[in-house]
Image (cartoon, rainbow, N blue to C red; front, side, top):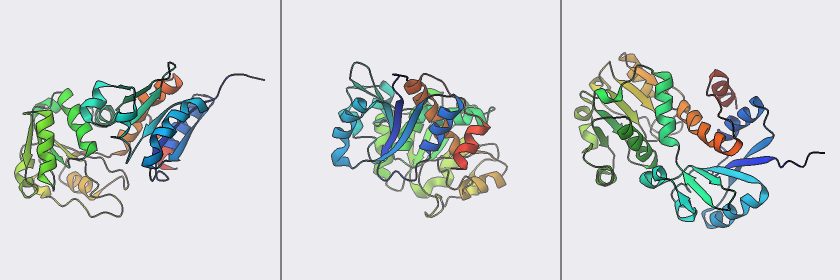
Length: 278
């Protein structure tokens, strides 16, 4: 009989049944022969602090955090990484052996790693980025784009004040456009990003002047249900290189898995297939 504890991890949100993270981490646990489980947990905001402090006692090594808890966990964590503090949200918690909860954010890493893998010729420093949306996902994307040398990030959001808040936090590289100025914003952009939920199954499409996108631009959508949104299909029809949003989910999970289970997983075709078939 083995006395070794089985490692546990999971994802906390509300709702959570739609999450593909259990399929992702379950695939890696099986692939690398690691005894452990990754569990989806629907936790109400009022119960979050109590649940997080109970999980390490139950053998949990850490958890992913999703809507609506990504900002709240920063107030609960004992240690917050510079990245999570800059973005203002965490998607990853590590339960340390000293009893402290460490919060980090791997979304920006996942965004860049997805583009590097699926568009290896992409050179973000060559010109401006045009970005739609100003929510939590946009914050992680902007932070990562600045880090890899994007010279200018143009933002349009239906509520301009939220975009202005991004400029106030991230500085002069961020330039705010009104939503109706999207054609002007797209002019000369080498990278075009949708961080909104528009185009997701059950939501309206992102309606922008697609003919304003340069055929040489890299176009990516954070939405991955469906994999090929109207936004990506229209861009591809113009000759653009397009990258869907599923890879961001896969890549952001890799450093989390390594921290919890001690194995850096590979994001490959089998990983993608496992998540798509879930």
